[in-house]
Image 1 (cartoon, rainbow, N blue to C red):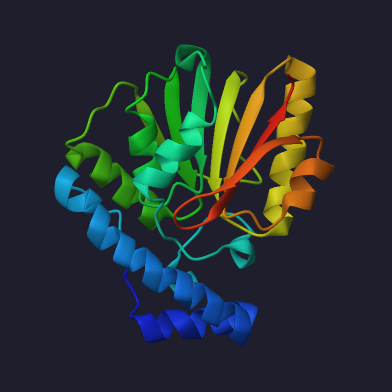
Image 2: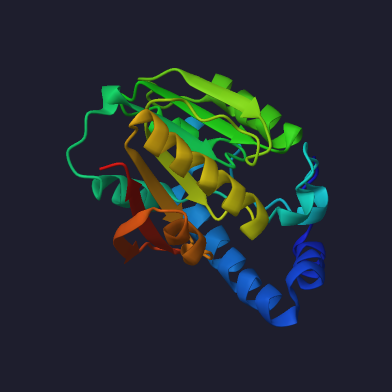
Length: 232
């Protein structure tokens, strides 16, 4: 897996989404790079989770590669802010699932909380390999076992537990529609309580159309977020 330079990433985005969207995304990308210098996450914890990986550099499994988006990491300050919005929860009673885990930063941050377990999955074997390396090198607190998997989200079988599901705009509407339908059916059939954190939301209508209720929303330092629940 290689990291494309800024110009090549811009060309990839323009080809996939059009010029206007690519310019907007490039602006977000430059701000994210500045934030990474401030946060110094990788320097502090011995990992390599920063940087954008362009669409053209993402290898993948399954039939939904056309729905993939660029990778870049969540800021720790935004992760902490959104998790605080969950209020008092029984972490041991929940499995945390990072959908489109990329290089594993959110899974690592979640493992610093006493969840029942943490699962991260991505359709890109190269990204999951990097995430596994980061898990092995991570110098931060790990209170929970972390499992990292290669899987197409449309085919992933979520655990039959109460769930905290985290998504940083990992893919487009085709995969999201399929995944939301499976989660909603599982919640109804198995009596699960599922909380979904949607960071940088693009397809809110798919979430609510699948039976999830929007309970809270806000603006992080980099992107907005929304909090959904089903089964409560």
